[in-house]
Image 1: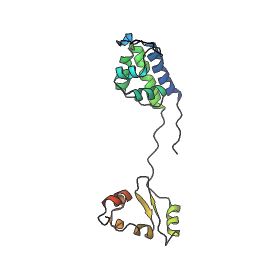
Image 2: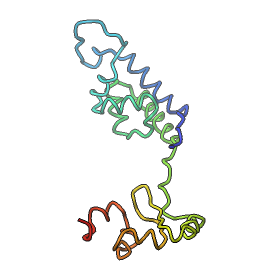
Image 3: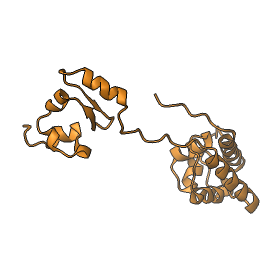
Image 4: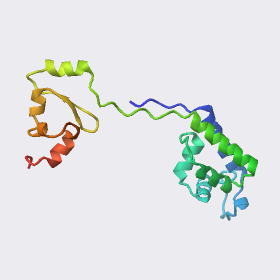
Length: 175
């Protein structure tokens, strides 16, 4: 189960600023024509702003909700142009984005490919029954003699290429 991320205050500040500026900017201010009918949202719609800035609607929604924390400078500049921000507001938007990126949670480190000693001991205690340990990507990380014997010819492959998916599709002995 992946750890849940909490939204930091700097991320919500960026989202709040974008939302506030979007609702304060009318479609007429940015050159859009309003169709017939009532608009339920004040100012620009999310999809209108995303289109004007040249980014996807999904990406903009993630920015506004604080789910995306590392927008590039070109995205920030495009949003500033689309919202018609002055120099001071543009700089404030850059600072909010930098603060959000600084406090964003770092991605978790990649899973280790090492097998703990107690698991290797467990493989040995299961002898003569075949047993092996595989990674999420089906790499064979550890085995006992019976576990390796389950896959004929796998012991001839280099250690880094011992992968069950690769074996099932590429081994010449298999039909």
